[in-house]
Image 1 (cartoon, rainbow, N blue to C red):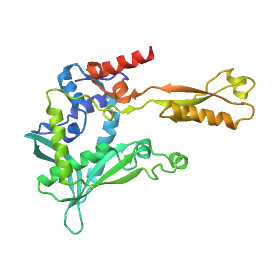
Image 2: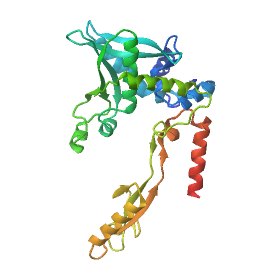
Image 3: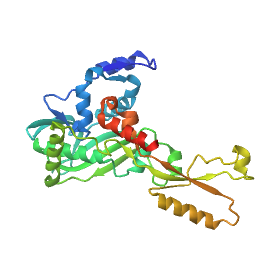
Image 4: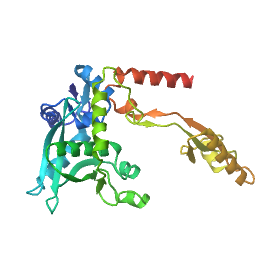
Length: 313
């Protein structure tokens, strides 16, 4: 992979990128690779020499590394910190580097902790943590068990990089502090072992599976109800007759629900002082469109774009 610096950041960023290689030891897969898309992993391997990444795109990773480094320095004398462990799954060696294992006071086992840097909106949307966090920590717990450690609890320590007091005032469910500790339920072995086997098999398959909707970060299409500026209204005076509001009044999964809402709103009016229009917003594949480094080589993404183009014609 080639590293670029399109925004002319100070050279220290380039040097950091070059001196911070990821090393996972003698393993076939890391846990973070296994919980991600097999297709993306396959395409990255096939096109590694063609890929480029800009140092400005690594800033979030840099912040995460800084948080890990600072908190590592605050570990207690009995804590196990940044421990890399290995386990064999379906004849493949997998590995995970655990941020912190904190011993319980009664010495009966450990609380396994993972540090995450995230956004306030992300926790507002998923206050119990992302699915990938649950998958990752439970795989870590199973690897730790194989290595002789008793894991009695799992938790994510989420550092909110954009936390603000105004967010707390605007949203009742917004995180109340810049750091949140999220308890992650421990899966029993009847669940975690088949899951780990399934992930290894998916990554080893000759016929590489397509990315799922969650792996594409798909945002499903909706029907948006907007107001329209009517002649003589204040909005018409400011923007012109027929001006459609930028912000939707409501979003609906079906056209029928959107039509019903418009009908109900029109019935509430005495002299039709408001008019409405319904705009269909298509599904979007957020990762494919903006965040996947191998999308240009992906036949699935090309097919999705072609289908979207046919629908728009």
